[in-house]
Length: 437
Image (cartoon, rainbow, N blue to C red; front, side, top):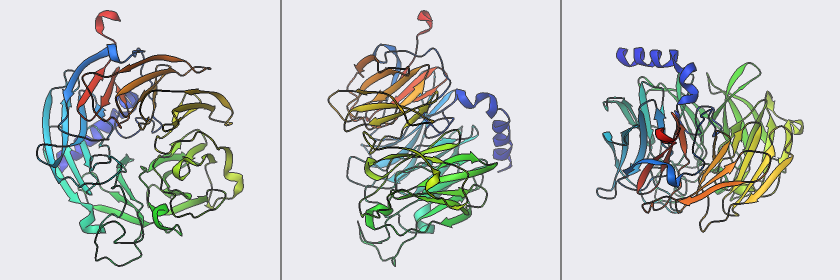
């Protein structure tokens, strides 16, 4: 592991200058869906630079570090799960790892929904089956684990879907699950099951600590598909773990619960499962309540049980059931995918700036991505929409990816002046062509 540690140290030394140029994990370099990239195309259909075939379905976001792009996928030919590494310049396949058999789940989900994460020395592939595999950039497996063997079967109706978080030298995995072991498939485990936040050593794969997250939520309301997100608050590093009825902040070093905030009004309904992740801001964090019933702007820095003063503002309409909001240039872009609406609000006050209808013939499941004054959206049928991030609702372009992309639920990643769009059948790379710059 010495070689890995040296490579990781070198990667961290240059991280400050490269951070915004790469897309190292779910929701990008700033954990909010945005990047500082410039000179990006206003229309994606005409800007495709290359395409690469995907072996099967997968909803994970492509992860990009310098000259490599990483994706997870199912393999329709073998029924296996796999992690892929491709060349950023050409889309050519560099290597592939396999991760056991896929599992069938409902709602169009697959076990290739969690996104990878990378620190520039290794890439960490997580799958809904609980397989977690560390691979160096040459394709050599450093370690692999099946987390369910050590922590029990994950009981989540539509399959485990949260991405691993790589932050301050630790790999974080959150498991917010149903309390009933046999709720969806046979199990001999004893109830009630615990939900927890796990910290793992990226170099060895060993558990560093496990923090149980107690809850009085009922049935499906205990289940979360959201990824843990870091936040710097009051001079401390906190890992934010949301659920449908409340939010917890955990000390990044120890996992200890620092604060907890119950979403008002306190409901504890039995179907408040949560999909969107937290979005960190300047002194605020933005949390979607289960099934898109509200979006809450919450003040950070609390200790213990946060009171009602922690609520800065609240949005009660056109909130997302699935898409994580985008924070970009002081505005929060909130995508109601089923209602086909985008709402832009001032991130500090919650005041509506604009709202517009996206249209299209499919649901907009993927979370929006922001860069270069533009908002990039992708529908379930491969339709792309580019909006202006300006003071009024403006559609810059609308198009459909070709050839037929199949189902499209992955968020768009941006790195090195290029956009990476993963669909069921194809990985597309788009950008401004050199001759037109």
